[in-house]
Image (tube, rainbow, N blue to C red; front, side, top):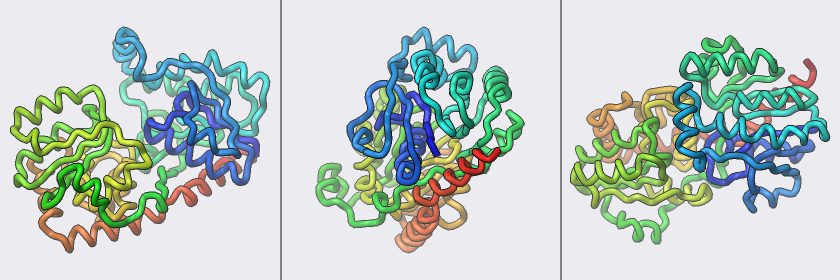
Length: 376
């Protein structure tokens, strides 16, 4: 199979779950198929070093560098920054498809299905979320109806149900995966423990962007309700950082908060293993790759009972709490921190669940879907 993965941000290291999905699938399918990646900007060295993948790069407007006026215009129509990346990338990349043919082109953001207007071959669409808002739904549906993908896959049962309800599309459920060799249980790193002053402290870890969706403000309010020996590690960044720093000061917990900045993906296993518990307090989460990575490292999790998170956590790998409830979140975290046996049982159960979602197993599911799509 001659396969092309098409996504403006696929060549970047610091990106989201969709980009991680695309890179890991490309890496593994390149062992058995001819794989090309059409992406924007400059490919990160660690990705360019994968010898069996051919990268083709074109310019585009990154989601974090667009003018404020552009974001305001998108918001007015209930669109997002990914849409800006998509429409800025297509004019530059489309010539590539007039000169190159593929058996199948896979896109990670549904509006990128417009590539089929110039690309020959079958089309696969991966849903890492679903359209919210009537205008956005109409745009998605118009594009997908017009370009009619042979393969549709959603990252969780929750997303698959919303895609069916909002777009009328039946999609296979293919979870995002995790590298269970890199993300694995192990001892705490003494240097990290010393650097973050974690000795004789209970460490709660959050990994993700500082946005309203991620519920970091709820987490700060929960920490304020917990014992003084509880510290919070915040690995990430985003538009709400200054507001969160101000909230920590207002709550009188600024000395218990460690703002770590954006942490490289390959450094995250050290953090997961240093934490006594990982908090995923999202207000919405199509799946929750952070939750899965924490589970793979044997860390207990306390997560919001929303979106695809319950599908990961199940009944034994962590505690599920209502989103936006600081008191409930504080109670859930405290329950895990005060019961070592419970924390160990959760960690072991989480690792067992994560092992079933290793990227090798997930890529095999994707390969089967693509090959079946080629027969249609």
